[in-house]
Length: 83
Image 1: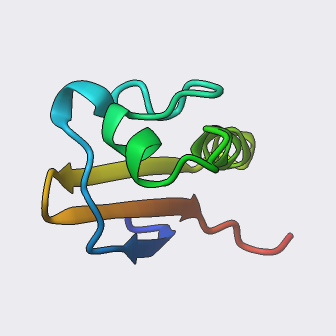
Image 2: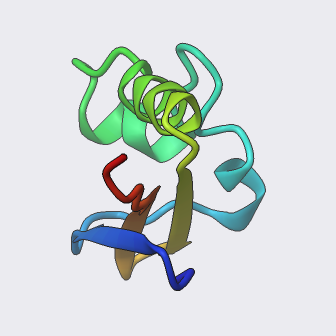
Image 3: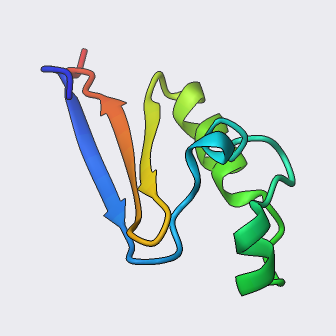
């Protein structure tokens, strides 16, 4: 975490995301192979929107995940002092 930022971390104990798929999870409509079989109702837009919003505010999204162990998605937002 950077000194002038705030971090929000969301963790789950789900199926996890294989390393080879992690680079694709921010692509519009992308759904991992396992995710599609476990929950067929997703659209593949959630993380795309999160990434777009974070980029718009100068922030970052970091994903750490292991298959069978779940995932941790960290949102890092810069702190701007009032003018």
